[in-house]
Length: 413
Ligand code: HEM
Image 1 (cartoon, helix red, strand yellow):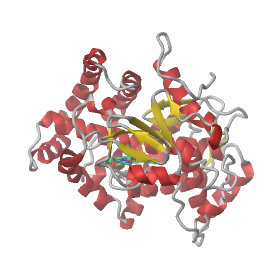
Image 2 (cartoon, protein in one colour):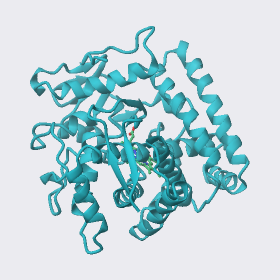
Image 3 (cartoon, helix red, strand yellow):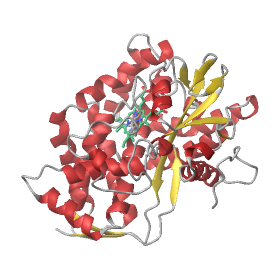
């Protein structure tokens, strides 16, 4: 597939997947062009990919509001609401994430990944698809554990695949803002997975009781709206974490020397974990699980050198930010031990896999602990080999490689 850096939007006959993948490819393609020669826009969206302009957007969420027609189709959630509505929703889930993101939770998180990896593949060599399922199961358990819940995650895992497909379709339909014509189609497609999620929750009384309790908090919400918010939270947490780990698996399998060094560090009880940490961050930099976000100007304003009119859409490219020539040495290369991520290096304002500011990722601390714990376990217990060619990838809210037959995974212990 070729990427056109000025791709205007989906054309008739272009599949959802191909279209969305082409948008991501276009963002990668831009980074190989000198910044001064790049087109300012992708379709009708102004592309922002420098730290100063990104900060302007992220620090002013009232001026650059979220425009997330895709997620809005499921109902109001903290992902798509702005202003007072967002402030009313956020604490319901954020309290749980703040508790679960404390460093003392690291051991519990590691124990869940260890349990899933051991239970699912006691002595066999897992295939790549199986390991992704195992990792998604662990991420689901950790998501529910943040709310003090221990449900049977199997029905939620089954629901997840359906939700991913719907998200990809909705993303295409809502790409250039939902017209009245396709708004009904978007709502119609979103209804089924939400209904199935509600049914899965109703079958597990403790989950249902939690959603009912969260809905009853002031200002009270309809149960269906709270279920939509909860489902969106679940999807956001599991898809991104699993996608990040899949990229790490692919990257580990490409370099046997690096793989051995990561394994030695993971097995050393005295080890500081600095290579594991910088490898984790380099994977998040090069393969940002959320490659871009879209914001809408709520008033006429100026962004960098551009005048924006109220209603204009801006695409903040994390792909571009993570390859900004002024912010990184050798930005297009993958360096597992990158100097910018060495212990003691100052935080780089161009590293924003979780964004920053008020609308930054609510589960960042949990996600970081998950990635660290899972990475350690993976390199300790498995050997990975990746095919020579770049992996195919898919984009449905998160960007993830398709691990396939060419990826070999062997159990070591
Ligand atoms: C590697 C893993 C993850 C990455 C890279 C990631 C990244 C992001 C990004 C970029 C956003 C902003 C999206 C936007 O503005 O459109 C976001 C939002 C969010 N994420 Fe994550 N995320 C990860 C894991 C998680 C986990 C594990 C949870 C919860 C358990 C979580 C919960 C949230 C929530 C609640 C928001 C919405 C924040 C708000 O606007 O109120 N994320 N995440």
